[in-house]
Image (cartoon, rainbow, N blue to C red):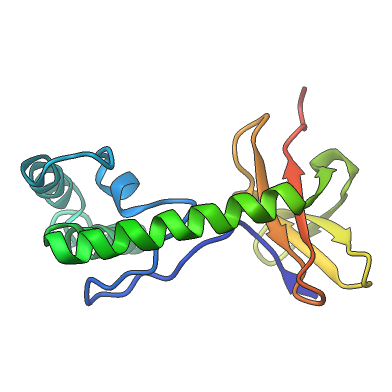
Length: 166
């Protein structure tokens, strides 16, 4: 059984982050890609005050603060920001190519399961290679949005449309 979800990248703490296509450093900071250094800095300081572990003591806020810190470390320097933007552009191009080649499938077509341990719904789809894809409830975007997922058995791509509750 394979866990499937949206295409994401791993962020590192040294500023050489791999772009995430679900949430970029710009998204994390709440700024546009054309934001100035001053706008990025102001957004970082504002969000850091809100999510700093000394102010809010939850695991989720610590994760948010780490992501915020990683975004700031990457975008605050022109060289690392430029490298990040280039990586982000290439990943977006690659994702678009995959999306165009992906087989469309509707979420309503998938089998629904329930994980008692996490008390979450999981949507299950059997790939053409026989591998089972699992899409967890918290991985699903808003209604009428589609997302890309890959089979780890054959790396075939599926474009999953959230058509539930129409």
